[in-house]
Image 1 (cartoon, helix red, strand yellow):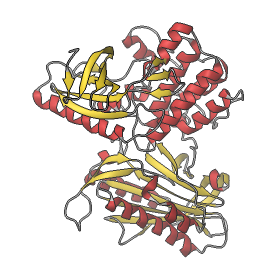
Image 2 (tube, one colour; image 1 turned 30 degrees about the vertical axis):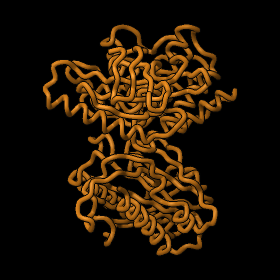
Image 3 (tube, one colour; image 1 turned 30 degrees about the horizontal axis):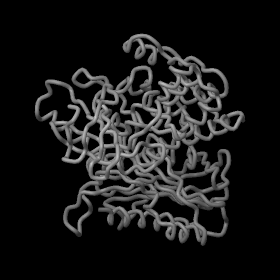
Length: 500
């Protein structure tokens, strides 16, 4: 199709490469007089018209979500076009080579260089995970090293769109065998931890010069599911071993792995959260308050950030659905955070994400506030929830926390000064009126029977939101702490209702 033109604007010059998900073209944007890259997404042959139209719609929707990502480590998406019965993605043109090409030409990379590349990619993944987006196809061919020194993650969002379906669809493998996390191979939709595993496998290639698992695609899949990952050399190998732990909850989150790799890049020994890579137990993540209940470790989330484009019904009714993710540590403004924490210098939001959904924390000295938008284990992201599934999740949370009323658990939030595991007692849950469509709250009390943390859960349309406020100070009364959490919850609800 060389010499063709898209949208009467983008002139296709020549192919630059191709892969399982499509073909990339060098093109010229005649309106802005610049060179761009255009990715032609190929769809399986022989699809019925309805299925083909659905795949095109999903590809466009995911591209729209990806286009909202603004990060130097994520390739910029300029435009989306549907022509010739397929989507075309117009992206910034990068000059340089992929990590895979660099290793093929020059062999294994020095430890510090590979660590810097990995840390840069993890910063990009952290930015995307904070918005509830996963890449789902991190591999050496999708890590681009520009001539100017940038490390850029390409093909972002495309694999995620396909990953919402089964691993194979119409005979097409979603992802690259040898770089697909084991839980995704087993049919789980995966989450941020799956991207961390894939990047760990990619960094193995960087420092060893060969993939973790060799052989035909089927052999690589079998090995991923049955053979422990081999150990890579040096301090990068230590980080890679943690990133490729068999169980997703045993892996460090993207930001913790990034910090460890930054240490390696600086010539230091990596510091990673302690975990047992063979036992499915939750590990502590950056910027989170955690609760350990009964014999298992249970997340008591404190933070979450995801903004949404909504589908609205009547002006006075709740939104019908929150459909498209955006960056939303802005669900709480700096002014609101300052008022909640009673400071003129409020902390900036620290975005994060885990298997329960996107998150944002605002930790300060001896106090902090956070929120999370939750999803169930069967749904890839919160905005794919329906009001019915969100109601079920809300009821399950209410039943779950109701079981622990009066019981002692352990609680921690190192970023505000609550180091280690601190004993706390859960209060009974109580209904909350005038918030969302249904809501409940509970608190945590310390050994002196004083409240130090308050949690509020509510459902608004297809979203379940959890808001948390904690303090280590003696001055606020129990009621002050409860009201702070409730005020934060109402502020977040207001921001969601105003989204359009």
